[in-house]
Image 1: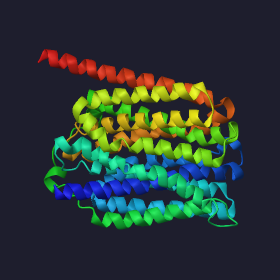
Image 2: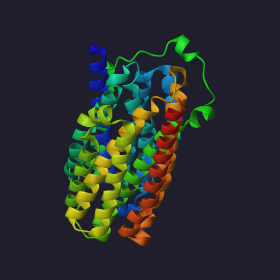
Image 3: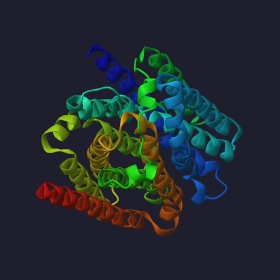
Length: 395
């Protein structure tokens, strides 16, 4: 129990530092890109490449962690995070858009490892504590929600002649601190017996209704959240004329809403079950779209992004918990890797189109475009519930 508590604390802190670095990049890079991008439609490319990098690294990161262990895998990730901050800093210093894009891609490769924090904490933990452990690790992002945008605002003028470079320098600091914290991680590697245990083909695992429901729900939650969040800075600054400070405030509270529920989401999952919490999250994301379509004042953006954050937390945490029932220890790495691969491949497509979408069609159509995804998630969840009920009646 003592080791479990320490691992939750370490991984929750790493989640906080990952979220802080991500917030720094997501808030600062669009503002930088607007000034140096070859075309306004490319302004969200660096943030979109974060997701592309995550998709590229999802399966390799999981398999590397299986080979070298969780701690070593996560340390490799922090090296990539530091390199990302260095590339983005150089992008500002040399006014080079493609260096900024490289920084985004490299941070995404780091995120491929960081996305395993939530799974790592469940390793070896009892089923009763699993959902709560996952939600507590995700709750580490609460501080990130405040620190990331705040550090971005401070970093805006840290270097007098290089606007925004300071935010990317802070990214390097979060990576180094995460590496130090990881020294205290104590997760046992899989035994040879567990690694060599019987494994089903990956396609057979993916055909399970539980895998489909969990993967579709998590993918939709992450895609809708990322699609809308990526477009928000551009919509607020370039379309609606709001200030950089107003935008960072909206993103800050959105990030808080993403992770603050983690302190109690695990208990809610234990009480109501994964399926009900996934459904609740999807409804909240739908509410976000409704508010976003109702107005473009700062308060409208704030309310929409706040609901979006809570909805993401409920759905993503519950879907992750549900997925842990779909595999054996020997199947863990490839199943977790495939789930993240699916999520971030779809999210990458959404992110890459987000900037062009908001530039050519406007903020309203960004929100309307997210609606069909929520419908798909609702259908997959209903199909899973119907199958569960049918099997219960048969037995």
